[in-house]
Length: 444
Image (cartoon, rainbow, N blue to C red):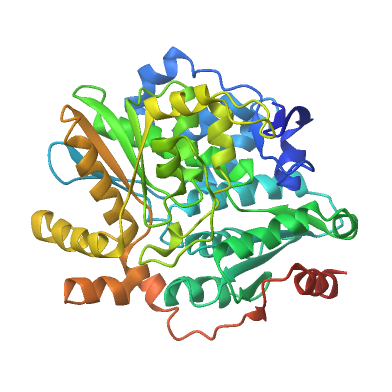
């Protein structure tokens, strides 16, 4: 499989080149050259396949030319070794729990798959690989857990000071060993800008082998498509059509759903649910895309004002070269399949309370935004079953969830034991030069 840049379809890279580079030199994003539908036999067998087997079949369909079957099966089965159960709220609304992995967030799927794929391609390379990643909350913990003590790989995580929850921060600042944290006195967008600048810095890249573990890396995105098929399997094909509602920040999760649909998954509609950082819902309504500085909210992992994966969404719907002016037909095609909604913190808090009172289910703030969006969309689409992606365990936002509900909530042991661990992080401003200097001092 070859991968092309969203800024230049003639720029091609192999799988290994794409995952190690992370970002093409033209500042686009890598996309698979082919997104053929999965064979009919796959869908006939889907009800009987394990989650890991689903992931392996999809990976083989996309990457079979690049990794031998036995190696690919081994790494997928190792990465996807925890469930993604669908929980029923009522006859039309369901929750897909994506928090049963090591860091209690959906990003475990992508991070574990990526770490194993990178480890496979990195065998025998004498120069260490440095993974550079920005996080708005859950990415950092998932990447830290996924790459912890992986031979030949160092991980540097940039996160916005004071804008991630305490337990999220502990997940990425307490492991040590090959995991390094930089605490940036700014927003997630500032962290993301530093990471992108590093990848475009040819001088630095000649000195240090850099790669990314954000959803800008195609190997993070591919395994996120697995659980759309797993959810559809659990719901069963018989019944009303299925829509997926995705709490969205950098829009990698929604993009993975679009990839799943291109591979043949019969999804009727996608719902993009955001907080006050609503640049994509605004675009879907108006056709005008206006990235802007993010604002802090209760659902912090979605505090993104310039979502990177928006370029991939545009590419899937006709913008072949991302440097060209936006074609109105691209906007129209996206509107037919994706509806966007945005909610403030007051509505989010109301939803957390409502879900517990009506269904006895404790939902995290991000899932609560998804609940609001699905409920609103279903008012005009009552004959469609909706699946809300619950992207993180509510205990990762323990102080806020307990304040909203007025009682304590359960904290899984592997998260609770982090509370007393010592945080180790290097303070940084929003300028790129000091980060570059630190990387050179650390890894040269």
